[in-house]
Image 1 (cartoon, rainbow, N blue to C red):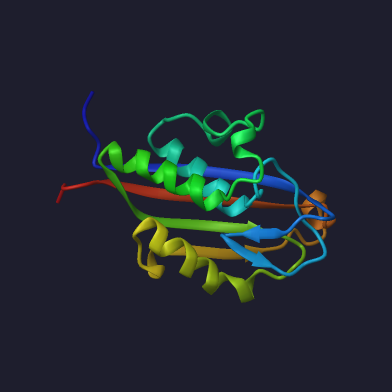
Image 2 (image 1 turned 30 degrees about the vertical axis):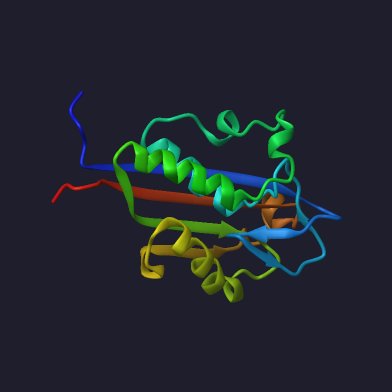
Length: 165
């Protein structure tokens, strides 16, 4: 197999909004009447980034690595899962060149929290905040997200082989 200098991965996640849960997106607690339902903390943005990282190297997906049938991951901090995955990526000889993401939510508004999300994610991944794009979108009141029943996220990452010019 020929080693590739660059790899691109695409990730996606969606979680249902539910009462009695904290809303955590991009590692940031966002004040809202509902949170995301999931086995872990259900951080859709971090989950999408994890799947993008894994996809770039054709590794298992987040559900295979951290199954919802395993109590070790019950209410897990998704940032810790992201760190474990990024350690695997680096062990394969790659580092993140850049990340581009979308958070899709009808409510609450995400824009005020994006700078804090970047401040959480950048040092964890050894990146400058300028290497992480986080955009906020709505669904214009269409589908489950537009109906305030769920929040979704998309992520794409570019990996570069360490030590290659």
